[in-house]
Image 1 (spheres, rainbow, N blue to C red):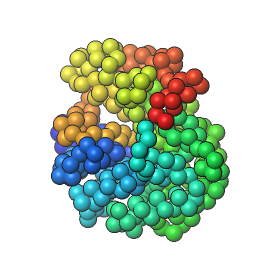
Image 2: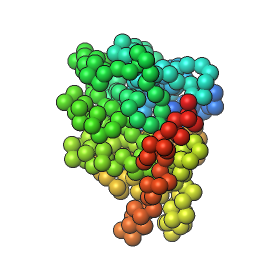
Image 3: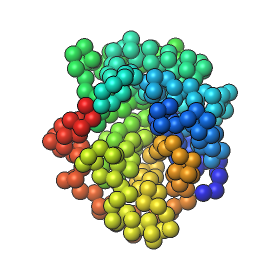
Image 4: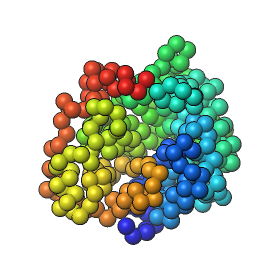
Length: 315
């Protein structure tokens, strides 16, 4: 991979122009990564031209943000930091998160971002709703109306604490309802083998909304297919002298021009592999073969039974 000013080319997330290959920082938690390794990886990412960092104040109760600040502050003017709200860090349980959907909790999460990163504004903040899988489930007083949440997000934007509003893990009807708030990006689970969100992606293309897929290469959860294991992907990878992961990411970049990647890793070698996706050019035949591999029957999020099975695994 050759270091470049804009790995993968450029696209917009709201008013901000970013490289299409960014970095998701969730894996930089202290449980598995030392501070020095995390700092080195973040600095290497920026050397490659990454200027879109995805984080959250609830990642390891703020420690991931602390590491971003330690590695990169003072932040470059072109570095766009995107965070998310709607959860909080907890100890114990199958996943280290709990719902935090109330307007006051959304505000508290933004304030935590600002303090942990030592900045006056977060460029984009995604409202992580709990309307669909994968993820947490809203129960009791955590079942909060969209309008109340958006009102708080708009107030934070008006106060200058956030630059723009995104939304995450929502079906199309919720996205349509949220649109008047000025939604600039959508983060939903999506990848080559998980395309149950295609209608939402089409809507984002039509509305010029950035599409930022998570689980772009699958997941380690049972029943969630891994792109790198698919035989067609592996064949095309060999033909292109690329890795299967690079093929899965390259397909996403080729699929729609509004797609931004935030694949995360705790390894510099894996980071460099992800950056190498920018050098992979898929011809029409390869894209057609990849388009044909999707089977809704194997997509755990394409049907109600699969969704519930997934939730049983992560709760």
